[in-house]
Image (cartoon, rainbow, N blue to C red):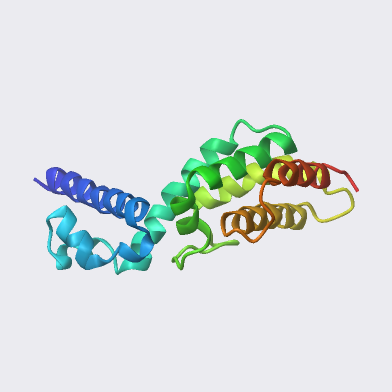
Length: 181
């Protein structure tokens, strides 16, 4: 009995995450509320709260899935050009997921207490950027490179940069990040 209950609970947990992500992709994150999710999945709000403390926890669960998907997209990148392209393509192709990962309030911790999947994703960035650090601290260089990619993504997505220069910006970022000081 307990195995079946555990399996059903895990399935319900995934249903909540999947439904939240689908609703956010269709209508935006503002549409994702515990009340709306309860209606869509056919369970009461107390059942939903037995899985997640609230919306931030749900967004966190979606973000963790996104981190795994980003890591999968980055895994094959062996050069700065391949990594920057994989990262920016992922961010532009999955804007709602990217927002959950890096712009919305979540319960994710970065740094030493980060979830293992986040550490692994950062490790993929580090693997490519660390050799470019020269005399700089490789971890700090990786953080700055990540920040540059993130900034480029958000400024582009929010129309804060001139139109039509996306490819040139990505190429310039590759050039700048690929230079060993």
